[in-house]
Length: 200
Ligand SMILES: CC(C)(COP(=O)(O)OP(=O)(O)OC[C@H]1O[C@@H](n2cnc3c(N)ncnc32)[C@H](O)[C@@H]1OP(=O)(O)O)[C@@H](O)C(=O)NCCC(=O)NCCS
Image (tube, rainbow, N blue to C red):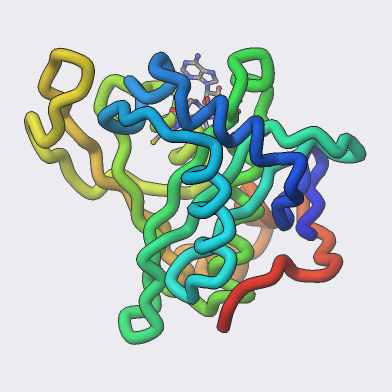
């Protein structure tokens, strides 16, 4: 488990699946990250269990420090051993837990995991142009904008422009090497206890 000042990142437990099922069927949140498609509980459980055995994916449960309740998740996918890259996505499940710094910290911990445990060089993502909060969270965690794909997806009746962002391990190394500088992750170094189960 990775422990930050506000949240922890770690493995899922069966009690988490009902929350995952509710979020998978949250049509309002889907407007911020993809075309909506209803999912049944069995499919959600199958997906989570399959992710745990898939070497190209890691799903990390986000919990508030010292609380067992699941509040969100980070998904790292398309992990490539050849290119040393992956894609990342995040969801904080309920509005009441958003805008409190949990997303930014969870992303910082997840990036640390990508560099130090998956030995990646690049982590990329796509985000809707109008999803300002997510763009700010990604930027605050160290991602930089790389480009814009216009009218890429059709979501809930509208065409959506999609922003490409990425973070690089070497940027962190440079920041570490510069005297007096700190990355957001370095400011709150994570405590690593029992790294989450990842298929090698
Ligand atoms: C996107 C998401 C993960 C961000 O996590 P969060 O915990 O809500 O965000 P944080 O509180 O960590 O804030 C991160 C940054 O966004 C800013 N922010 C917070 N709320 C904001 C809002 N309503 N509008 C704009 N910016 C906002 C913060 O100021 C912070 O930037 P700073 O460090 O430069 O001050 C979360 O809101 C979420 O899951 N939303 C729904 C699903 C989603 O959009 N997923 C992303 C799909 S690509």
